[in-house]
Length: 109
Image (cartoon, rainbow, N blue to C red):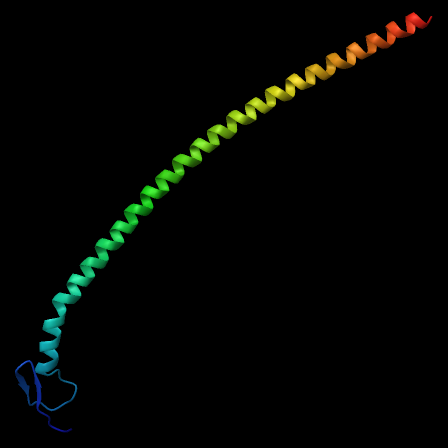
């Protein structure tokens, strides 16, 4: 392996380039680690905020769904009542129609 001298932020590394980490890599890692940690913390905060927003949205949608279900049940109840009223009026209409036919038949005779 070739021996090399690399300058990085005032650090001279004369180690052979190989599997062993050199001072340059250690220096770079030491410099970048705090930035990565800040970025990681920032991402975690953003993810937590997104999770909280999703939870709020889910609660809001759940409340809307429950309100819509209650309204649907009320509308179904009103529809059943209206259907019963129409059924009753139809029965009365049939009875009235039958009576009118009898009256007309009696008037003809």
